[in-house]
Amino acid sequence: MLIRGQTVEFEKSDQEQVEALQKWWKENWLSLLGGLVLGLGGILGWQYYGDYSDAQAATASTRYESIKAMLASEQLDAANAEIEALVAAHPKSPYVAQSQLALAQAQADSGDWAAAEASLREVIDGQADVAIEGLAILRLARALWAQDKSDQALTLLNEAPENGYGPLYSDLKGDIARAAGDAAAAREAYQAALASNADFIDNNTVQQKLDALN
Image (cartoon, rainbow, N blue to C red; front, side, top):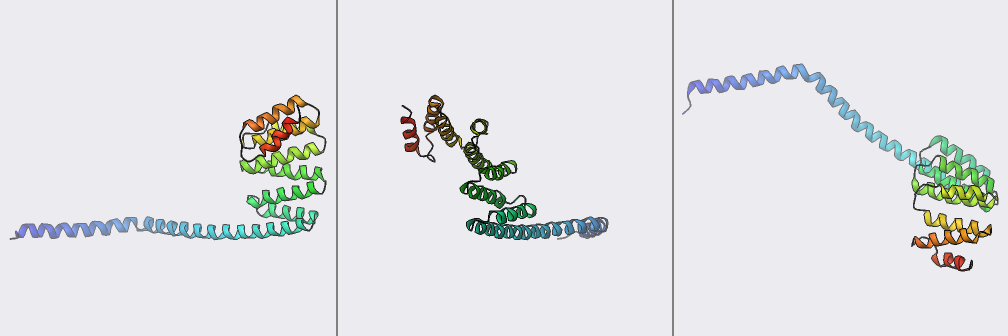
């Protein structure tokens, strides 16, 4: 059985809670509304950023395909101009380095090693990806060697940061040393390449070059 006093107390407590809630709402509705707006703005902003990023990536991809087509048809000057436009519009796109590497390869194939060197230096200067930078260093060393800049090539390879390309660097250092008639340095470089047990180098070819020194 309910006691009258208790019932009144409960009713009074409920009323006080309602009044307290109403008071709190009056004092805090503006900040709550602001938080809601910020929350919705963040969600919509992130969605817009995602859509924008996708659109930017698609545009960069289209430019890259255009660059590859130009290089395939040996339009190197046009490809270079398109790469400059790509860098200006999408400086952080991964297609920038890929395009520059492709251009450097085309320049090397045409025998323009100086131009290839310039393109590869641009890749290295603007590259944060260790793997791409490592590949660019390897190709730059070859471009320098092709221009009779063997000392610069060896310095570049010796000072290269750790990036997983060590065995390939050693193999190339062996080739440069062998061409210069330095059999001892070539032997040391080839042995270093073989000692790595890397599965991405042609160990049989390296071994043949090593055996030819004996």
